[in-house]
Image (tube, rainbow, N blue to C red; front, side, top):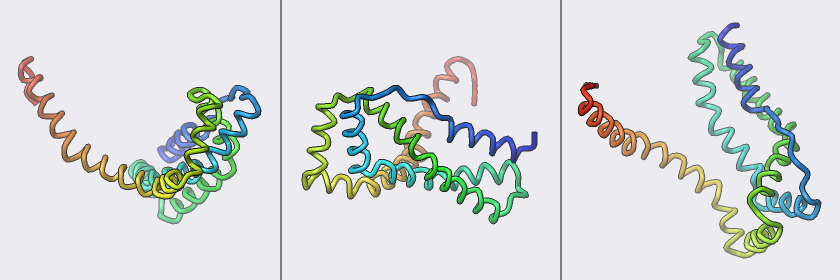
Length: 164
């Protein structure tokens, strides 16, 4: 199989594997869906996917340098279209996850919080908070965590007779 086909098949498998979700009690299902809506979860998921796309496209171009920017644009457009089309499965999966970790009472408390002024502010700043946190995490991981960890690994390896 050609590298381009392998990448497309792998991306399709990873992004669109849908698991059956167990039934959730109707009132809890509705409350979770409202929570997902009020918090903008779907928009945040789409934003996260858009932020990951440049990295995915870099991998695609490395695997097959013949892929043009026009083809990458087509891929991006179709990923976004597929995201929108598969949103019901995404929401169903998210409902199942929230159902697993929260009671209906806790969901209702979250809804009450997100209806407050502070809750609305939290929702409003969350996209920027996530974007800045991801950027910070990337820099911190590269400039602080990785050098510290690699230094410690090198020291331990040297003690065992391995020299990096």
